[in-house]
Image (tube, rainbow, N blue to C red):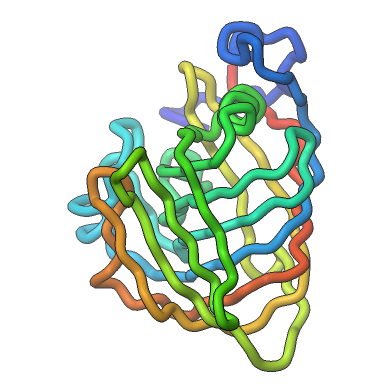
Amino acid sequence: MVDGQVLALHLMPENHQIILKNLKLFKQAPAPWKLQGEGIILVYKFSRKWLERNGDLPDHLKGKFKGGLGYLMLVNYNSSPVGPYKELLFLPGKFSLYDKQSITKIYVSTEVSTQNGRSNWGIPKQTLEISWEKIKGMEHIEVKDGDKIAFSCKVKSGGIPFPMSTSFLPIELHQLWDKVDFFTKPSGNGWGKLAKVKHLTMDPTYFPDLTSKKPLFAVKINPLNIEFPKAKYAL
């Protein structure tokens, strides 16, 4: 409900103009998607003041931050409907517009993932080069725009594995894209190990600068299984 009006939610038609306009010559891979790979989640608790100053929020979310847990997520998908790709995203928490979470910044390593992510779920993906290497038991991840390093981190994980799922770290999304409100509730599960961030840098022109913020905890999930259902949208 917004401004006293009840919004009707509908499944996105397969021939919706967003798909036809944005996908161009890229492979169309409509939802639902099932993806497998490995991931790293840094969990934060942001204040409204900090996020408004440093979060690089889109205009429709400014002044509407409600709180909750925020995530910095890194994912290395080895299997998806559009092939393998890597991902870096920022999900700061819930917003009062619909009392749901929003991904406000996200980079992926393939353009076909970008185009389908926008058209299927309204996720504001952008395409940049992402490398993910394992060196001496540590994950080395880097996001680059040509010669510029937009993001870099080193993460080490270990200990006894434990089950993880979206019931523990829930995600329920609202995304605004091309004047359409998308609503999606992805689900995921896997096996996690506690992780430590050994190095973290980011260029604030590309990604919110979290270097001054200490995560509540970090976890490495491998294997990681995620399912993105068909989105619903508000007329």
